[in-house]
Length: 110
Image (cartoon, rainbow, N blue to C red):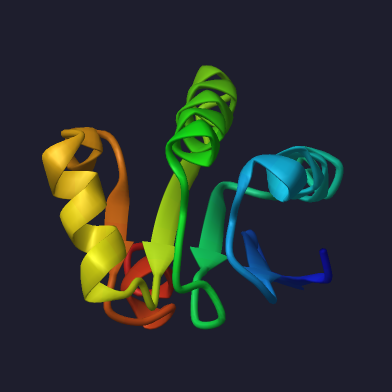
């Protein structure tokens, strides 16, 4: 899976370029965890190229969220499709995940 990572001040933006499924969810986890530094406070998963997330990968996203939270980091989602938002609602992970309208939502909180 091609995963683009960009650092903007204290924000790490991770952009996977395909759907998040079992076969590539570990790649996504490595891309996020492997690009963390002491200056990072927020991770944004930009899902503009993601149309589908399967249940296994949803579990991986929860695991990533928990790892980040232990280190006082926040995980946010940007550009999710209506079907992914429905998945998040049905599985009640919206209680944990932050959905953004733009990257500025995080920048302006700083």
